Amino acid sequence: MTHDLDLRAARLLDGRVVDVEVRDGTIARIAPAGTTPIGRGDGTASAAAGIRTVEADGRLLTPAFVDGHLHLDKVHSLPRLGPEALELYTADAMGGAAAAIDVARAVKRDYHRSWIAPNVRRVLESSVAHGVLRFQAFVDVDTTGGLEGLHGVLDALRGFGDVLDVRIVAFPQDGVVRDPGAAELVEEALRLGADVVGGIPWIEHSDRDAQRHVDWACGLAAATGRRVAMLVDDAGDPALRTVEMLALAMLDHGLVGRGVACHARAVGTWAEPSQRRLAALARDAGLGFVADPQTGPLRLPVELFDRLGVPVALGQDDVEDAYYPFGRHSMLEVAFLAAHALGWLSDARQLRLFDLISTRAADVLGMDPGAIVEGGRADLLLHPFERPVDVLAHHAAPGLVVSRGRVVATTTTTTVLDVPPRPEESA
Ligand SMILES: [Zn+2]
Image (cartoon, rainbow, N blue to C red):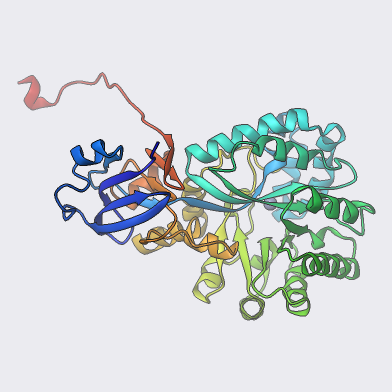
């Protein structure tokens, strides 16, 4: 049975309205709308060949979305905790962020795959519905929760392999110097199926320990041929500089272009000359960044870094966990919130937001960009509106989600109004 598709008259982000032929999971042909030769894609012939034709009627077609950073094992765990961590994390300009992590650890005392997997599954289904088909998932690996988070995530992911591309980061949330035994658990997690060596150097108790943490992670990544992804400098403290340690260690360990820095909120408190110096170092090291301006009051200087050519992605970060009560793994929702936080309101900025949740985000993660080009993988979203501004404003689930050429989600919404008729109708 074929899953091939003809999308007719779809609008691309560059404004072109095109017909798109999807064959065997690949974008086989893109042509100006209405120029498809008779006998090809005209509905009748397509139907005879078992090809599904979708009339896009000028609605927006974008690449599938990419999320640079999500704490996947902790999703929907907030109801198991009190609100204390949530309040600590964002209070006092993030002065209590480290204390929040200590409070949030309570949830891991009864960490078990049996309740983690259903929560994760709920988010994976929402990911598919919202067209977030590729993402980097942080999974806590520490001596409190052990490997239960990883097992929960691996259990939930079973069956999603043909639809989602999930890169799992083995993340020692409580540090590796502070939490003896965590480093060995990270190595075990890599053997069990995690892809990326994680780290959180800023949580250690001194700069010396942070440096040991970074060197351990980059050394392990280099020795095992993995990438590295770290949560860096996540507090309102301009003295934090572990992001710099990460970039330098990538250079030292031969990991150029193979690392991602998440959060990095403290960079937002630095003077601009220091920010520019970090941007130059990050370009040298091929270090990409993921910002999640919706989950904390401080943020990476996204606009400056983007302007200076440093790869930046947006991330969902949290879905109803100890640090953030909302989220449904919709990158359009994240982009909508980022538009406000960053002041990215113009048409040009809106278009850039689409890049930061798709092609540019893939670049940060070292994945194929997923652009809509002939020969590209057919991971496509057909949205319910023509204009990018409406797609962002409503941040609704796409009408059609195509993963590797196959329709994996459709969403329709119907509203029935009972309002007074227009004057001309009542006359
Ligand atoms: Zn995070």
